[in-house]
Amino acid sequence: MKEIVIISGKGGTGKTSITASFAYLGGKEVIVADCDVDAADMHLLMQPDRRESEDFYSGVLAEINQEKCIKCGKCAEVCRWDAIPVIDNKYVVQSLDCEGCGYCALVCPTDAISMNEQNVGNWHISNIKTGTKMVHAKLGVGADNSGKLVAKVKNEAKALAEKEGKEILIVDGSPGIGCPVVSSLSGASYVVLVTEPSVSGIHDLKRVYELVKKFGIRAGCIINKADININKSNEIHSFVKKENINLICEIPYDEDFTKAMTQGKTIVEFDNGKIKQILDESWEKIKKI
Amino acid sequence: MKIAIASGKGGTGKTTVSTNLASLLAESEDVVLTDLDVEEPNSGLFISGDKIHEEDKFKMIPKWKKDECILCGNCQKVCNFNAVMKLGKMIMVFPELCHGCYACSELCPTKSLPMIPKKMGELQHFKSGNLDFIESKLIIGEEQAVPLIKQTLDYVDENFPERIIKIFDAPPGTSCPVIEATKDADLILLVTEPTPFGLHDLILAIDTMRELKKDMGVIINRFGIGDTNVEKYCEENNIQIIAKIPNMRKIAEIYSDGNLLYPKISEVKVQLENIISFISEYQQENAL
Ligand code: SF4
Ligand code: SF4
Image (cartoon, rainbow over all chains, first blue to last red; front, side):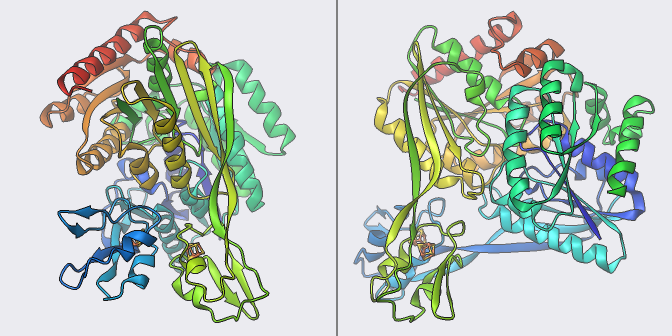
């Protein structure tokens, strides 16, 4: 099975719209995973039925049982995050500050501190409008551990693809270079980098590509809004050439992307002209890699 | 006063708003702009200035000293992040997984795991007129943004008095880095787009900020594209829309070259002035 991960480093490049288009073009041949769990938007274009849904627990937070607490203050002393201030004469864990290391529970002489698993979101396996399935998730508000939820979504999607005998897994990856994107990338067979010809687009492309290189994954690049700045587009051309990244396609600036989105459609359903043709050809290329 | 510019989804124009707002404000008063999107810091691409300071930022991780180690395995037992493991006659530390809690180190009976600094990123401080600009960048391969964000915030607190306006370009999303970047802010400005993706992610961001009990206002970027659902939502939920930056191809072009918008596009300047009056009203009402 091939695992194609689409990432962009920077947001707003059209990554999700493009991923959804590939998912649409892939139809029944593919399984789809939305690993951008922080801003999971694929479902707005894929109409999932959320048939199966499960809570996701990950990480722990400290909680102090005030009845057992003898107010020795040892927990507050060892906590590196100053997460246990004294409030109204009580030691109270501030859940937003707690890192879940559990050091406090280890030093508490009366065993007053318990480490409780946190529900950080939920994940679903859904039937989507293209006649296949999508694995997606929703991260709880302010939740930690999005990297782990990403890994969960990916693993479930992989297992599903194998079970259903699908050849291709399409993954909408997370932004940034931190733990969620690391989880999105691990195990990928091919990475599609979506960028735009702007100073920030190029900056983030280079940074995220360095990460891709560390993983030794082959990569291709899509330049969206390519005609916004020809000089910057050329700069991307030389960069991908130098790094041996295949240039999959260039897409012109087109507000139809947004129009399609407002109707809950992928751009390839909405547009019958040039953009559709470009994405059709790109998908054919990517599929063969 | 601390103002965080945030957005549920990336690429809605957070950096555009932060850099343009800070620069315009700096035409008449002292302003500190800090880029807390340490994974992909972009503000610096739009701000020029003289570098007045730079420093490496470190996190603390344990380092195994084998001489006195009795291989009791206590370190492995106490680490909640699987960052230290006993493998045969060796103790292995996995620096990317370590959160620096010191448990393994301080609870080691033979003191065989002293904590040592490991570089996780760089902080740079630039100055141009009234504007101080601070940017931190996470090293590639380093997975945790939060410690670097925290140290960057400390730098700002140590170096600037409280009353100055401080603008923070927060990371996108709603998970731990965003919480760290916004939890001390007085006011949150959420930048969104009038599209289904924009609205969906805005709602997540609003829920997050409500949880943090923050005051907030919304800035709609690329106004005119998409639909009117963001406006409807804000109205129904009593959230003030403080500016609407128009959708113009020209804006995308100027932005793409790394230039500020308001000197060239008067419509943008008008909207930034709306934000500035919102901020000064807020300041007066809350005596900041
Ligand atoms: S678990 Fe760690 S971070 Fe949380 S309160 Fe205890 S010592 Fe602090
Ligand atoms: S310092 Fe804490 S997180 Fe790091 S290895 Fe030791 S126990 Fe694990």
